[in-house]
Image 1 (tube, rainbow, N blue to C red):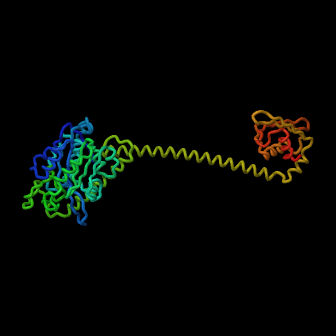
Image 2: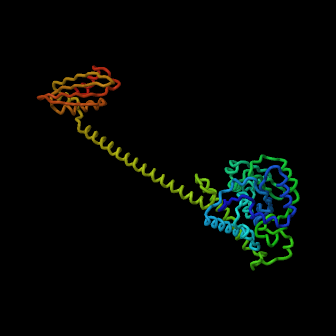
Image 3: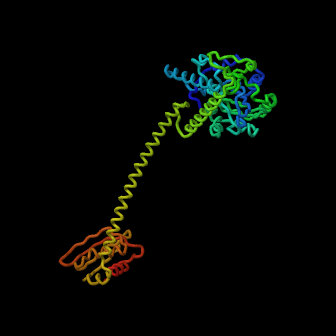
Length: 444
């Protein structure tokens, strides 16, 4: 993901000045391959194999050709404010200066060529590939190199959900078809803004063109002016003049020649790795942010901050609800424990020999039962007002696990009359069984 991807209605001059360089055999092959196809291919890049200090194999830029796309619709709309345009131009200059630093200090980039111009998605993706390199097994290019097999990805789904940064980056820049064909000295990459099905004729043509003509020693053609990174004969950011091996030309701006400088190479590699790591983190951030307004880093960070704010508000809301629920549970537990404590004290206060006490306390006891509808019954108990008959009757009903709906009592002289409406348990459905159970519980 680059910091800015700017649209254009025609081919940008960022690549137009590359036509001024002398064409080589490799460049002619790439141009012939792209232009001779019936399908519309936007670009072709040849990645060559090289070895690092530890002898590990990796791919670097060898050469490329950009043909362009037929449809410019994937390009974002240009800003309308003058300040926005100036900001975009400044950021593009910054990116090009960074790319110049990666390529080498002895190459000058005429920044006026990119002033007041817009470039397409595919064009920017092609140019920024100059600073890329891939190890064996790394992504689609590394897979094609290590396995020697064809990689052909078509459609946004295959590219976006592929476990490869290069494929996802291509999809973000409007590439719909990405092809990696292994050759004898590296991998040829083709990209198109259209969906193109597999074409084995194209694969065989690539094998015939690049199968055996490449230099087996990837470092033999490196010149002092291009030793900093890769070689590209299709872009003026690179020089591929073999006479430079015999003559070192000082930089126009008075800089020292790059020949013999080993420390800047390490700095270039560190800068390249830093950018790749930063881009991978932005891709990971893009994957978790659901809604992204624009495909640039500033907008992505702004959207990520907004999304994090939404998540924090949701967390606070859920925590408040959880706190309320916990408080409610604690109150319910408190009342439950209080009821249990009251019940325990009441049971402890009851005499153990309840039958004897109940028998002694109930005088002139009369119990009448009347079955009502909906499984309810009305119990009428008449007794002397001695030894708290109301409390004792309620205790008996509790022991029988009767659910009391209504209760009333009245005292006339020394008699107490109690009327209670209860729900009949399943085991007691007749008046006789209810009366017998109540009398047995009361100990009468």
